[in-house]
Length: 491
Image: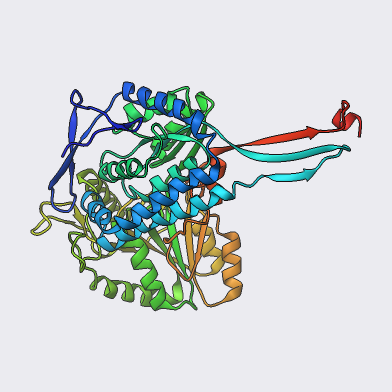
């Protein structure tokens, strides 16, 4: 199978381009070939998007929303088919893949509702016979750069609010997981989305991504990915005076207090640390535990690992699938070796799996370090794999201080039965998302998603807050006095 770009409602020829294989990380099977597009393809896509946006902005928002309803229904109709493809190209287990497609369905229906709720404000004027209001206005062409770990969910967080707000978009998916973008393009085509509203260009970040960020007709860039790349996007986007929305890394922690329900805490830690093989920006990579329950928690965690089955995510009995590729495997192993050298105690796991049936894929054992000091590299840097570090504390105040000591601020969690501790924690934890008696994952689409510090730059995906990325506020004054009124001068 050969994937091609989707530009101006048409599947464009990529016969003259270099193609690279898309590989199933569970078994090395080649799934497709994806093109490495050039700046010219970006230029063509942006031109199509710019032309289409003038007419698309004139379509009433509730009518734009009708397309999102149809997209949502198509996603629902194809849910199992899409989940199977998602698992094959990304590796996450089928149950999680179904959940991710459901997230796209939910986002379509939620943002379709916003077609009738693109609210502004009316406000009294300070002058007689004058009316004042604010409205949301579309910005134009937006550029979307999405990662491989959530190839459909994150794309819908970005594209659906852009569509309903009256923008058009050019989307660069990850070349690791292009099949979901290819399937989304088919759905855009099936529902009759006007030509040029949705454009998909496959290729690398340095070529396609840079061309998007530098293009003068792309007014907004929404990026999810690594901090290193996000910093470059911000720098380049700022140089061109673009609105740039960044969602980057995390070093998320579960706090377990001495009064916690330990069995519930174990379930939350295992799910948020090892689900998606730890390849979530919200994954739990630190457990900050009170000294009085540390030993028991560790015993329970190690016991829980015996119930985990590693393998191909299409097998419904598997809990943890592969990591995305060999480079990821090597990076995770590198951090595990660092943890050993730093003096952390390896409690469980710590190995690349290389014997059959794992020899053709990219598998790493769920790994737990204990006796981790807060200043260790494995406690501070994002590993993006199934590795968790246990850090001991003596109080809630110390737990919050340790949680807040990292450069990221995406997600945090506390397990406690004390309402006073819970309210102090949710106030003082400096992350964009806080969970109480749950793990660090599980965001819902109707609330803002994003974080503080090195995780982002103040914008949010998902929820109504996403509309702020894809709209500009316009203030409108209507003077029906029949005379010149000079605002503050004449009040």
